[in-house]
Image 1: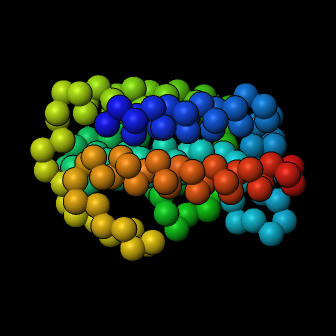
Image 2: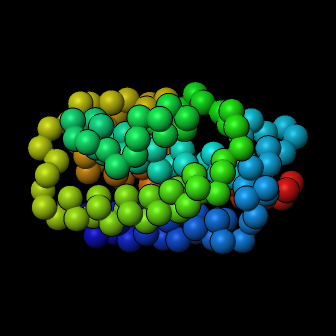
Amino acid sequence: MEATFNIHQTSRNVISKFLENYTLEQLNTIPEGFSNNLIWNIAHIVVVQQMLVYNLSGLPMMVSEEMVNKYKRGTKPEHSVTQEELDEIKTLLFATHEQTKKDFANAIFKTFTEFTTMSGYTMKNAREAMEFNNYHEAVHTGIMMQIRKFI
């Protein structure tokens, strides 16, 4: 799991650069031809990691139900994110990583509801969910790299 968490830390570091280098207005901008924006992708990444690893393990998530409903698969930006929401997303970006790392070290993931992704990958346990999550974050980081060219 060490490599998985090293990759995840790197992913979160790359994602945090978007939060540091773009204004709130830029983060909220949906360029022509896109269905979402930078901040939606970042919040989506945070929510999906929690859903894959914790929710499928039957454990409480660090994200609210409201946040899940705004950023889960199939959603799109319905409003501009406020500075307060941005601050929460920034905090969760690294807090979720650190807590997940601790929880794996403490072996709290005992059960898991098997889940097959849209891409056809079936996760059978929390470890596989965390590994798939790194792929998911990379996909969205690529989308964000495209979006930034147009804002």
